Image 1 (cartoon, rainbow, N blue to C red):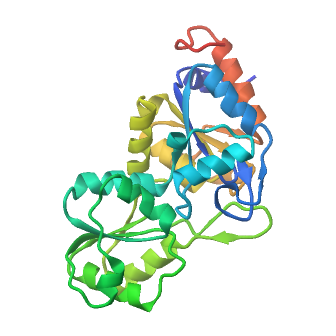
Image 2: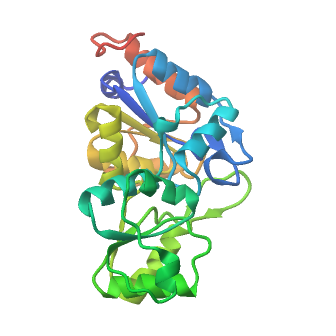
Length: 298
């Protein structure tokens, strides 16, 4: 039987954010590419829906668009809609459109990154023209998964930052969970280099930023205190949850272990630790069977 305080927290949960890599799937590519579904993942999403809660999934990668990620997850048996998939690109396009509604934004990343900016009609710098010497005036530089980032892009990004543009980054996590090998991050590596060159500090828009939690809360339609954030990385999902007042959950099928959870700083310590998604279902079942659960269907 779980701790009574945890059950009290869980029975008030109205929405759940699931991480993808290391939580629902494990692979050697982002968002489950060439991978496998982890134990209980399909069943956990089904339980959450059947209980009357809302959900979304969030990967910190920007190599693919939400629609492509959703289609791949569905091909693996994980039923999610395109609109339920979140990436730092979704957060960045939303946040930067609000902050700079008409100003030009310089964005580095592939089609998976740019799609969300086009959808939200963000005014983008034409990188090819800028690298060819055409003048530009940008208020922000946004760095995502850009494996073609070379000398010419470094030049125009540095020029923009030295002229006063703000530096944003999709994620600066050094690596993410994988099946057989270490998968290193790209956007954080680029942003750190630009910070070194320009002196302009980077601001992360993906997990664990408050921007990501705000966008997730808006989508789910509930305050962060009524949201469970479950993932495999204490420094991403657990940190984001604890800083926003959400319920912080760790599943030990990816980056962080139960030992990591026991020894980490109190302010980022997950409130629940499970070894697979079946254990999460069991905790939610206990919560839903407890007295006075908030309108949840047992």
